[in-house]
Image (cartoon, rainbow over all chains, first blue to last red; front, side):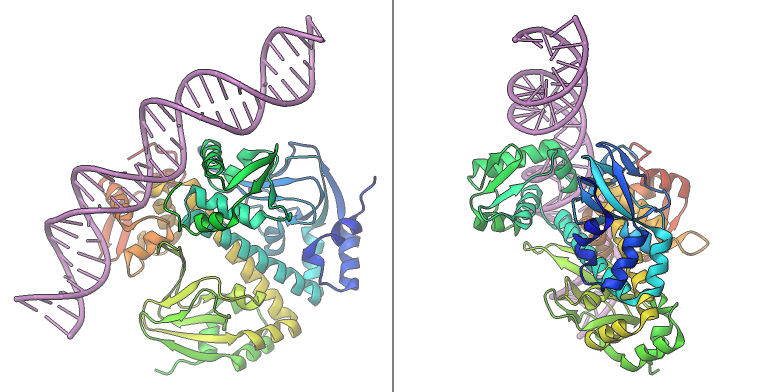
Length: 229
Length: 229
DNA sequence: CGAATACTTGAAATTATTCAAGGGCCGTGG
DNA sequence: CCACGGCCCTTGAATAATTTCAAGTATTCG
């Protein structure tokens, strides 16, 4: 199946509000990019190639500490974007990006995108709204990491990620990626999952799915209202 | 001295690039707001009143954990803004704001601001650039908190904040505010300052100023290349 | 002068990390 | 087909970093 840029951009909430004409302009500038599993898409400090819109696959965007520790800013799946901020603001990539699965993206190159933003007001508005959502997400993540302990962070993640009716949450391919996202070591992550499991709040549904059994208590843990488990 | 909105907006980098006509529109919608020291400007969850531009004084924007712990997202001084994201994106205030000194702001109310953004492309572009800078700052802060230890965080803060030629850094009025910003208790903050002082990397210049004596070593600590002090 | 507030410092407690080892899964190659 | 190595997750024990608790000092303000 040959992916086409229009289809990829169509699935992206960030471009949902923009009028057809602007959208067409985006489609015409977009390029398809494919990345094998494990392939580095860009490195921190690289000039920003543009906005990547994931069509299929999964990408992790992460920072590296001098001591080698990684922190995953986000996992980007189909319909979501990364490197928007650098592309719009015109700075270098502030983090690394790597495909964790075979991935197809639409790339809106920096230069034409910026030109389009300068000329196209509705597009500009739409992208700005997208940016505010991203900021809000970032602030939430920060709040999480700073104000909650390990169990609180995991609980909040699970509650936020809960999508399916049965209260089942799909975990990223590698658990240690999630651990890193929540600023935990994979050991601590593992122990925390166990504590919640032993307390009867969650159970493992599938190999990489968790079922939430007691969202009320989970909420209390997320809010720090339960002393300890 | 009677502050005027034009003067306040003039000092704000966020509006530096926008053309005169757009600027005039902003000035005409702006209102002056004064806050006594200690006065709460808004609470988390309030509908967002608009973008605040600080003319004089100092504001802290912070989140609160259920257990009472606070995290200061940023200290906002003259020429800077807060609540931009909520105002532009149209959501409720994501944090609390409080004047830590007698403060005068220009307020650009949400409704007219959003209308202006919809109608005024250059203004929209300018605000968008401002947003990207804010995101970059946030990501940097996050990286700081997640990837560095106490000494590293302080060192990086000092290096970033260093403005005066003599390597003197002005601290916020209350040290515990800075501590909270760096996700440290004030005790840990105090001890960390002492460690850096004993190691000869900084010295207290004034009551709330620090002089950086060895920026090279500070940089190494910030980068985690110095095992311990 | 007395109360309040902020900062500093020490000692104890706690949380999370590091180090070390074991088990499970999978793909490769004999 | 099975053995082997590699990778990932789990678990336990020891370690380290930061927090918490508890004074003690300094400064300000009434």
